[in-house]
Image 1 (cartoon, rainbow, N blue to C red):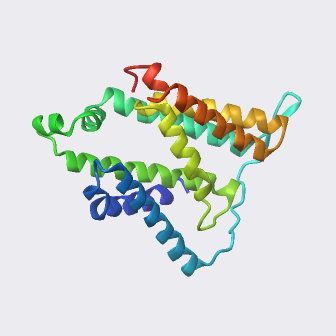
Image 2 (spheres, helix red, strand yellow):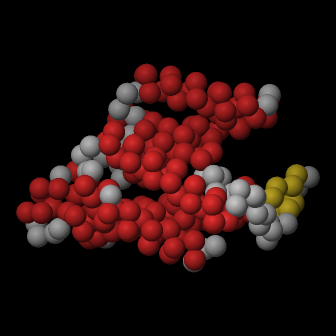
Length: 225
């Protein structure tokens, strides 16, 4: 799951970028509609081939005792791999020439082109790497959610809300948004039910976007990666 999933999804992402996404840069609504339609197509194809049944994946790690409390060992593994992945992405974007070029392409394709780099190639590579990270996330989450053609749908809205509320900064915005929404959702869930926790997350997202229309990093952590 840590090797095959990111490689396979990364290659699919490379094909999608070359065949579809490359023609839609700068057209946000068209991109959203195209990727949403593509996701429905892929779910339909996978369902036709493999069926619509859930395939369970064995949890490889047992519970871990911390004092008088117990927590799932696999949950700690997910936290650890998330922290490591965010640290790696931050290091690449902040301290390497590759990361500098990628950040420059996000700000201005013309400037990157003037410096001798091909913006189209930069977009292709970053899109493929982003798809690979998504594949890694799906593989890591498989023991908790099971394998179902439509299982990724439950994360689309949360991911979209987190990115939009986080703002322009890739690492700082995503981290801040996920901490805020995750904390609110889980605290409310512990005090009531899972459904109320999801509703609380959406309410906080609406309020946050109303108060901070440019996202968390639009007001705080300016200049952060």
